[in-house]
Image (tube, rainbow over all chains, first blue to last red; front, side, top):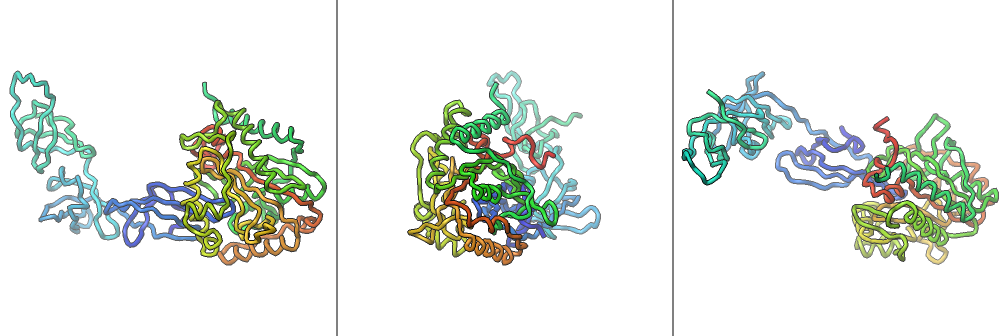
Length: 187
Length: 301
């Protein structure tokens, strides 16, 4: 159990069955009055925020969170299946929980899956992923429009801006934290 | 080069001393390590040993000096309150207290006006305090609001009922403090519910209220003053009531300051006030957090 005095920015706790992370925290105590703990929290699954005021003596269930190394296997409808690298057990994650990571997720990618109890609630990809360009307009030599980037679609269907010299079929490196083009894969 | 918080702090301390000395107050020192503080429901002393506590306020010893005939005294002292830490709280902090014989809380409010004007004039470039990028001018007319008025205006609630249903502190911090924070002059909240003023005299014409006030500057609670209760029997009953509440909420009862109770009958009518010096330095320097105005925080030791 966590007591209210253990709470600080970054503490993860369970409220109404959902995991929350404390995003801001202040101790207030009006003259001669009771200590109050003003907390802003974010639901780690839905992203919604919650403002609560607690008093001393209140206790909380810490959020049982665990990160596990897994391999992404395949997608079926809106369900993404991952396999635990140690137990070989499979878990299924909803597309909402996968979030923007779906733009960079290739089969057999090694990822880190965040579990709340048994429930997978998030996935962390390697910072850089190599993805193949499936569609982009050719670079017209002598183009003087001055544009230094053009749209390109990669094999996951994700569209991003790339430099004009990138061609269809090339492998490019994408920074999964920003979703932006990083460099091309030589060779 | 702009002055560091510690330079401003030193200047504030000098200004306080000069202000009170010019007003004929005697600066006193009393022991920090004492066998008993005034028992309070929600203030926990730091225990130095089984028998000795660090003071949560110098009030007990200073009132004993009033009993001995010192009429106007002030003290700047370190105080300790267990488990109080936040953007406006340090477990060890600096308190200014002053006491006047033959005076009541109205005189203390006048003292506050004089002191804050002097500090703003001598320690800030524009004679104004700052809080959250807003200026608060102590040289203009202050706002005085009874707690009852403040609650009905800002919290749409009755102050006495809020005490009974346990929501007073929450309504105060959620609605009243943010509302008074917008005021460009200091605000005095006066006449607290009787049950929230363990050492204060009740209002003769309205005994549900006590002659207690809180001074807010930019929404920051700066000082708490009151007309002193001088009846030793009533005082002992209130201490015991505070201990009963403590035990009900699972805290140990605290020893009573017996010599203080024994001498209280000899105390003249008086008024006393405690002001958070660290917070005054915050307002003078425009610091957001109390951490910015002390040489070291407990976490950095």
